[in-house]
Image (cartoon, rainbow, N blue to C red; front, side, top):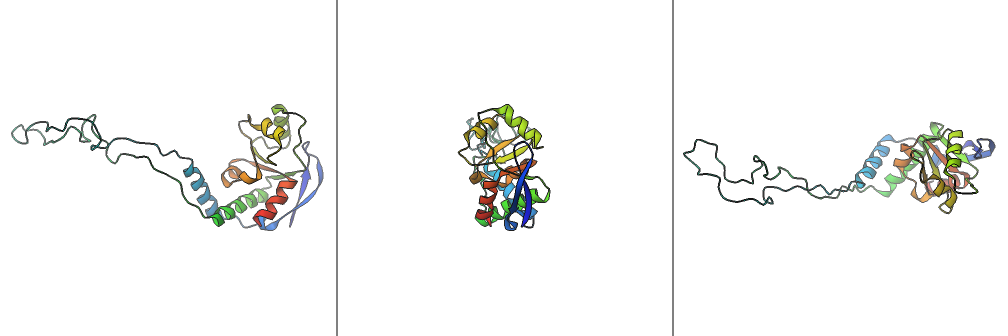
Amino acid sequence: MATVSIINMEGTTVGEFELADAVFGAPVKEHLLWEVVVAQRASWRRGTACTKTRAEVHRTGAKLYKQKGTGRARHGSRRAPIFVGGGQVHAPKPRDYTQRTPKKVRRAALVSALSLRQKEAKLLVLDHFKLNEIKTKRMVEVLARLGAVNGLVVDRADNLELIKSMRNLPRSKYLAPEGLNVYDVLNHDVLLLTREVAQQLGERLA
């Protein structure tokens, strides 16, 4: 098992912690990271784009002019895509962009993301994230001190002071352990876990 330093919110080392190799020391499978991130981003698409085809445009159905004798090109409908106000060719319709990703693939990708952050030395383990009050300025100072201005903080869902202190930060983000996902791990430069969360992840994903 890899041993990392446990630090406090001041950046001082207060102990050591052994990370589970099966979760934080696994081989990084980039193709799984790509597959899961693409699936996550696809699931966020609303899929509401909708334009009318020539069958749906409300215009006259009368033939523009007679077929022969005018010297002009043959036309039979004002609804044709060639005309302004006509129907759209291959018109987009509402659709579901969700991609189904197997649970084992999602788990393996998350393990790869955690292992990648550990290999890059961008994984920090803290003893706790205890705040005496809801104070965004305090969290800004803590993250700056730890070199995690663009950081992902993972702690228990009942730490309301932390959650409310971080909800207005533009670059950093809070997640509960249950909501940890590949996209957010990769989208932030530094991953910050409490010792308790690191222990839980090691047991749950191993």
